[in-house]
Image (tube, rainbow, N blue to C red):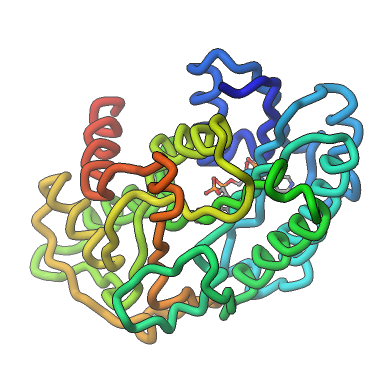
Length: 296
Ligand SMILES: NC(=O)c1ccc[n+]([C@@H]2O[C@H](COP(=O)([O-])OP(=O)(O)OC[C@H]3O[C@@H](n4cnc5c(N)ncnc54)[C@H](OP(=O)(O)O)[C@@H]3O)[C@@H](O)[C@H]2O)c1
């Protein structure tokens, strides 16, 4: 049981809105923090809000998630994904408030070739500015909590998020497939691997992790299993009954400012050993598309 109130930063984001929904369902008081009152570009944005709302926990879902934007403007990425975390963590720590920091599989370099997922204590070595800024945020939070990490700081890494309100990979693939002329195919990267993770599954799992006796520290939470971007797209097209062939291309053929880790698979067994595990990614993906269709 979580004794609220719980503050959610980035409350209008994909994960933020799922967290607000899950907490509301649990009957826990929620304090949604969004722009303009909570702004990652403003120093010490949290102080007045902590004073006003008196949360027991802050779940920090806000971040600059535009990975290509981070590659183009690394200083801004550091400001939003690291410096702002350092300030939030310092404010929370000095007010005796617990912090949950949501982080990413992109803290790893993706060079692993043994088919295993990255474990929580594997060495993080980001290869892009987004991953570097998020890792710096993790380190800043850990430094702020120092000896209180086990009681008051949870770092939750996840990957390939999708969910309401849409504008995510599944919706982009469906829209792109519908534009493909007859006889042509949809180009999708086949050598980037990860675990598609449904925000509606992740949010209650994050809350379960912090509700029990689970000590603070770093955890990985993703839907079970993994696939490539192309494998995910195939699942989406099959669920939507769109008979568009997929042209499996390599990352090198898909030009973008940021390079994601090729092997971005996370090992979520630590959380699972404590009873917090998400269902297989295929089931979650089908469920989401079914629900999206029903709401159209
Ligand atoms: N998306 C992924 O695939 C993925 C994968 C792994 C980890 N994560 C991590 O998971 C967390 C949630 O991601 P998400 O997919 O839910 O992201 P999202 O939908 O992009 O939401 C991010 C939230 O951050 C807020 N935000 C952005 N810039 C801000 C600023 N300058 N000041 C204040 N708020 C700002 C946004 O506010 P507005 O609503 O006002 O724009 C939004 O509510 C992030 O920490 C992200 O790094 C994401």
